[in-house]
Length: 198
Image (cartoon, rainbow, N blue to C red; front, side):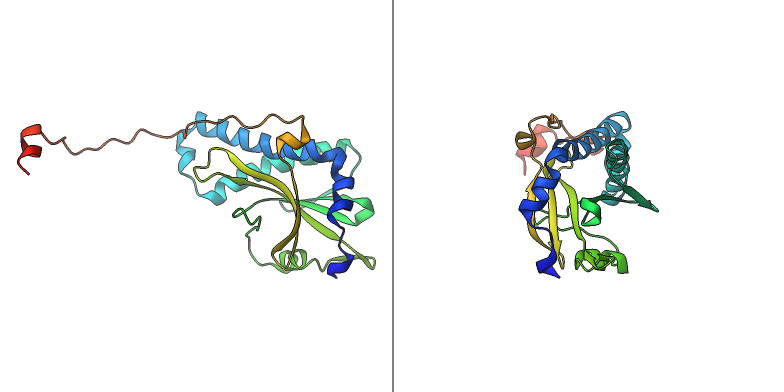
């Protein structure tokens, strides 16, 4: 099955007209998340899964509107958005990467396992599943990485960088200080004479 997958060069050529848009979905989704946190600082304390769901909803909303406008098939099953290109030979999904290895996480459903093993066929034709993903920095303030990845059995075979420098028309997310409540100690400060006596 691995020899039937679309190559990096084939995918890069097919995705070339959409690279700036793919990057902008991720960057805009993330920037919108940061704006939400600025407006509601308590959101800075939510779980990573909650944050990923909010970003995912925005990213897929943008992707669905763009690809529908381009006449490219998008399908939604529950909240899972799939974009189908090249007469069904290529399907894009959107995810948060778990680390620089560009792996993703999730519940190991039959569908997820088939996608990760690239075992999906439509009418006898091999389908290549690609992940359009992002990786937040350690503080959750900026994006460290945006890329399109072809994985096989959970390991990336190849990737296409969606770095703003390569696409040329995407404005990077601005660096911002972490937003959240100010933390202060409730313990009284030590007096100088006590500190010297120790």
